[in-house]
Image 1 (cartoon, helix red, strand yellow):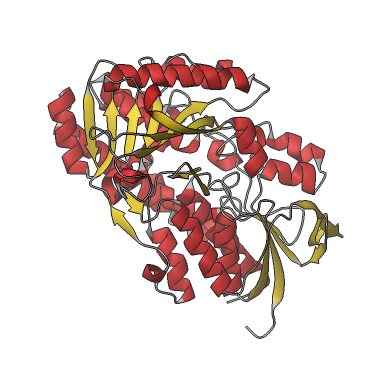
Image 2 (cartoon, one colour):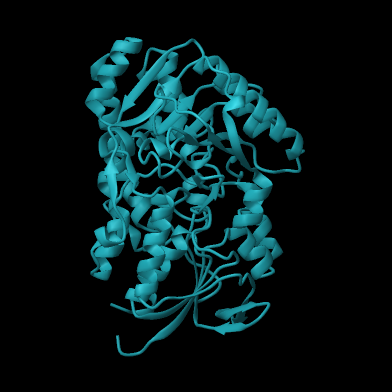
Length: 496
């Protein structure tokens, strides 16, 4: 376009990077202000004692969301970013000694669940077909359109969505849907797990979340070459190619306003003027700290926060052939675990343990030869002032006991490097209030509609992208939030 308009993006998480790319391609002169000294937010990495660790998200699905950005820019994605499809989605370990490898393929998974747990193949296939239908007819509305603008009714395929939704998806919990669909409690537990993909409780969250398994078993699971940090690196490099300006170590202190219009932002060092401001910061912090709107911030807190996480990054001085890229060690009593997370808000003595090992895909690169880099995560309650020093010790002991038991190995002597991330550190590093990974939970039927929109209804020129606003957390949804935001901007500013 002939006239360049300035835009400020607060934060360089994956949604901030995607927002900067899309705004630049729409003709804006974009500056990204990042409080850390590196881009990526939660999607960052570090090295310790020769081991490389992705610091945050570890599951990669829907690579088409990344490709879309490069296609829009007219750049070959392969020159920036490469990935490969995984044969298996996850390996599951149960307390009764059962070990199940779940293929990233609906038909293969159905056969595996039939052989392991006696599930009817047709039941599994039907469940995953319904998951696909829900995603394609309902999920696409949630993920591609604003729920807060009237024109969505005319643009989105609402009729197809209404015909796809069953009462169980709205009025039953995910657990009840799964309990009805499957005969074995272990299968139910496997599909209940997908509530954690947006920090929710399967015993409270609606059955609508049964659309999530579609991503893994119908679309596939992928591994980005170089680890998850390669997503950040690729988007950052693309943004730079598009002349986006990045300013690091520059936490924003204030969004400036005039007559209910955004006019720019202030940092400790400088004032930036722009008629368009996009916050990739947690929406609660945006209102409380950057806008000083205490009442609006308090209103946001009426929604339940999502779960957080406690992560141990372990350098393991041997290899475990029985483990895969993604591994889950289930708790024996799943409901009790979620009661502790969301009701009691304290540590559970037998947590479900997730281990991601990128050296399985790149041995000798992600970790020294014949060694492994373990990203060991347990779900944790949001921070409400718990003694996290005590909880770290309790979780660590519980994790090691479980792994010793299910792997038939003494794990602790094998740990030769260790770093820890808890909810307090998550909040410090990423400004995610209370350390909640996904902003608010989806533990109610109305949760999707109560998420903050991608724009401000009161302040012109202020928009939002990221996991704490519509459509939610996780890499695919964050990338979608950037698209929804930019579509609105193009419409509001009449940019083609």
